[in-house]
Length: 81
Image (cartoon, rainbow, N blue to C red; front, side, top):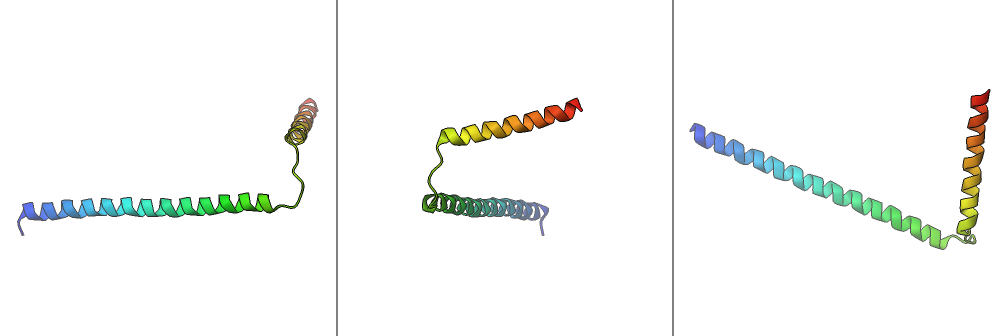
């Protein structure tokens, strides 16, 4: 076989491999996106279906601030010891 023809065939094969890699990446990304979308939608639906009463934003933020302050105080007392 002529070297030029062989090189052309190898180049075409490499181009096909690259295209297949691109298709595989797109396929994997689409499945990852679909899985994330399902996870997200399931979480939203679970939240909507939750029978517990909603917690006001201010209450949540106050609880978080209290937790942060408690942890900071504990770390401060550990450093002092």
